[in-house]
Structure formats: structure tokens, C-alpha cells
Amino acid sequence: MSSLLINAVGTAAGLCGIIGFTPQIAKIVREKDASSISMKMYAVTTTGFVLWVAFGVLQKSWPIIASNGVMLGLAATILLLKLRYR
Image (cartoon, rainbow, N blue to C red; front, top):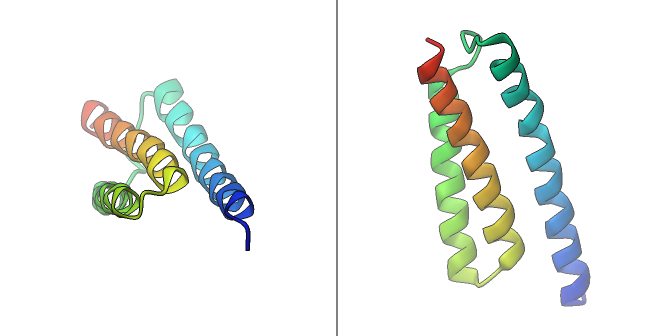
């Protein structure tokens, strides 16, 4: 399989993950309420993204690094909003 196709699939998967986080952040900011957010779930998710970024660096795979880096930032934002709107 060509590396171009592999990178395109990885990029598409990353974009889907990124798009999935943004409505949650918008809702928390709009309502100034994060009571329905699970701190444990987002702590585990954030840790997972740290590990995925590390994996991407080890594999030298920019789609893994970039998409998981952005999702790490989004998940961390949700964690910070959870702390802010306790």
C-alpha cells in the first residue's frame, strides 16, 4: 500500500477525532458547566494521547503526531474547563 494512501487514512482519522472534541468544548464554554464531564475519563484520554504522540515520534509518523497532538490539546482543554467550572 502506498505511503500517500496510508497517510491520507491517518489524517482523515485524526480529523474525525479532532472534530469530535470541538462540540464538547463549545458546549462547556457556552454553558459554563462541566458537571457532566468525567474527570477520570478525560484524565485517561489525555494520558492516552500523550502515549500516542510518543508512539508517533518513535514511528516518525507525522499523521499520528499531529492528530494526536491536537487531540491532546483538546482533551487537556476539557480537563482544564472541568477544573474551572467545578
